[in-house]
Length: 527
Image 1 (cartoon, rainbow, N blue to C red):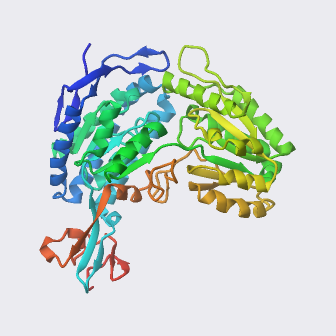
Image 2 (cartoon, rainbow, N blue to C red; image 1 turned 180 degrees about the horizontal axis):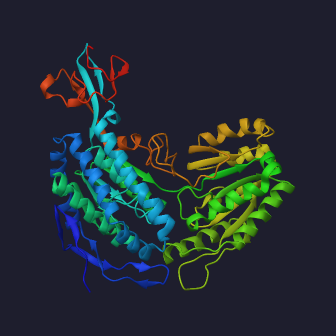
Image 3 (cartoon, helix red, strand yellow; image 1 turned 90 degrees about the vertical axis):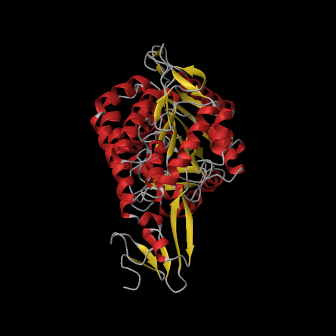
């Protein structure tokens, strides 16, 4: 059986591997054709050496050339859409339409094109000029960036095409993509198109490299190597924390999305006014994509009463009527089983679901559990175990004071939502609880479930630990996402001809916003 190569230093070449793996079709449980290598440190070392040389060259190239690459790459993905979607469907079980072909793939190419526009315009780098003291600063490339792709978004978060990739490249850095083993073939096709676009636009050949898989110890060494400039990671909390600790120990920027249960508070007035509609919205959000979203609503807080009881019954009915889709892997079925078991061991009552479904395919029953506020407060850490799938926990509190206590024990999350009365009946309660939730989440929503993540400049897809590693940064939202993979560079009394174009007196494109004498302007210095 043939083993697929890795992409290192401008060549698709055999890996110096420690072993191989195969990708399984989660709908059938059968392995797909071909093997992929588990790279040794020798592969990583070669990739880092090549990336270091590429980084030096990228610093000398105009932003227009980097933007041209991102746009050309997006075009090439669009042209190969049918083949990419077909393989991804086989590797993940995700539906070809609308999920892959009509939603995620266009979102991915849109991200690439937005990143190209940001690189070309240049304001993302915050050029700042003090003409009197002749001190100038700008964000510049951080160096080789390692991007770990996740299991659940094979395009939009791919190490070889997703948001971290686009941001790192737009900021002027080469990327070493670490693909995810659940969809290795998809990442390979994306890397093929990226590498072709590199050649067409004249970027250094090692601007994009691909390793399919590494052993855990090799990954720790990779993120902490002196040549690594930064890391983007989306994946499990356990693996992410280990990698983060290794990177932190040597001062390497590590931007991680780790864990989130995305609390939703449904206030009494909302239940009285439109309880059935809210139950429908919640069930739809929880079941979307088999619950395999980082913003899946996993914790629902309700005030005890008849409307809360009716809400639970409505959700149960919808969960039991829903047809659970294929999950991404048998490993996720095991993980979901373990998560449900952990909540039940901590006192949660099972309302419905709670177990895998019969073969064929990797599926798990839609699951709803419940605890009282007292039970939650007795074991808050255990009852915040993330369940990656359609599995949510209802926390029924007795009053506003207990709701506040529950919020006080929440870990950091990507999102937090409130549903409240449209008549103002919940406004006083909202005013008490909102400040408590606001500090626990990156994105606060009103009367809306959190599963949609718009690719908007105003979007924050981040949050306090353990949602992410750094609460001040977002993985979605250009231009802010680019700043994760940049370093602040200051120039003090440097001669004009030696300055980066963005810091010279003349605005290089007339569109870039620069902070000159404390005022944002598109004008030249002295104009």
